[in-house]
Length: 157
Image (cartoon, rainbow, N blue to C red):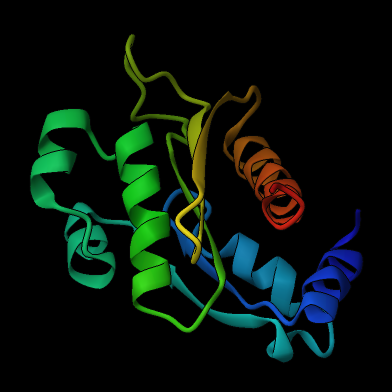
């Protein structure tokens, strides 16, 4: 589904989207807002690149970041839930990962990305992805996957 189709799906259901991004630096929000008329679906977005920003802007508990790392299932879920709490959106998507070329480790290699989703009804999920390629490639694949997840988020029971 293309971005215009995704926005139409949300529009038909009267739902709004929020984004909380780290390694993609706002690319999901940019993809959504590149479509004319997206303002009736896209509610707001955050780029929370630093750990401090994740805590201050989205309410991610600092102890989760310390215990699990900024690139983790737990942080991705907390980012998505925080975006919901701090917006008027019905669905939030979050992305945290290691885009590279540096910053990777044996446990968290370059290309490791977690994409979180949360809905106002309490449903949530996080996908662990391991993308290949350079920084631009990892970021592009993350955006594509996040947009696909936004579609499934409102088709799930």
